[in-house]
Structure formats: C-alpha cells, structure tokens
Length: 171
Image 1 (cartoon, rainbow, N blue to C red):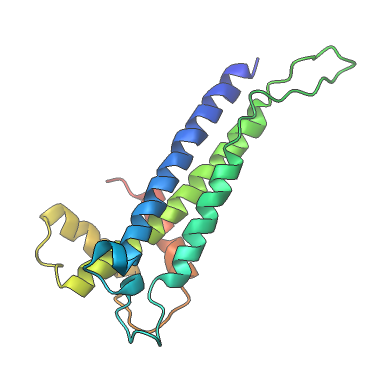
Image 2: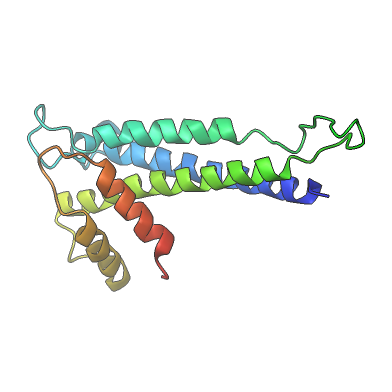
C-alpha cells in the first residue's frame, strides 16, 4: 500500500519547503540594506536608482517559496474511493511524490538565487580573497557561471545554470 510513501513524501516536502522559507528570509536580509546595514539595496553593484541588482530575482524567490508553501499541504489525508469502492482508502502516494519532486526543484531555485546574491555581496565587499579555501573554491565555481555584474541582466539563465550546478555537484 502506498500510505507509507505518501506519509514520508509529505514529511519530506514539509522539511524542504521550510528550507526554502529559510533561504528566502536569508535572501531578504541580504537584499534589505535597512536590515543588514552593510550592503547596498538589493546588493546592487551598479548605479542605485538606475540598476536593480538582485531585486527582480527576489520576486522569483519569494513567489517560488510561496508556491512551496501551497504545495506542502499533505496528500496523505486525501482519499477518493475508486474501483467500485473496492479501494476505499487511496494513499495518493504517487501524487505526494510528484509534488515533493516539484518542491525540491523549487527549493534549488531559491537556493540558487541566494547563492548568486551571496557571491555578489562578496564582490561588493571585496572579500573574495578573505574567505576560506573551500568557500573560495565554491565562489570561483559560481563565478564561472555568473560573472560579476553591475548592469541589469536577464537572470533566469544564470539561475538555471547555478541550479543545475547545485543538483549535479558531487561536493
């Protein structure tokens, strides 16, 4: 019976959705100069008032996190009898697993936006040579995908490339 799958997938998607909420709140802290008191608004390396920095990407992270919250409603409690009522309790395990897959993909997207913002912040502060060797290696790997930018860019291709890097990275 798929009850076990459904219950475990529901628990997993709750935890992963919570991770995306944490990443989105950390991102908000980085992008809000009134909160962090160190970085320019939206970690903007360009001209304030003319360039947007990571502002547009924040909208994506926020809406994606909200989608995760909506998708995290448990499927385990849903049941629609079928098969001439022979199957009176249907686990919805497949649905739960598919929704969990989407929540995981969404969370990688939010994390990608947060990571791009972090490397931009490191650039802004001039700290790229003051981080640990492991962080520097990761910084360089992300910078190979997303070069430092001051002008506004279409961010979606970069977000997707960082997302693919995170998913396929062995470290």
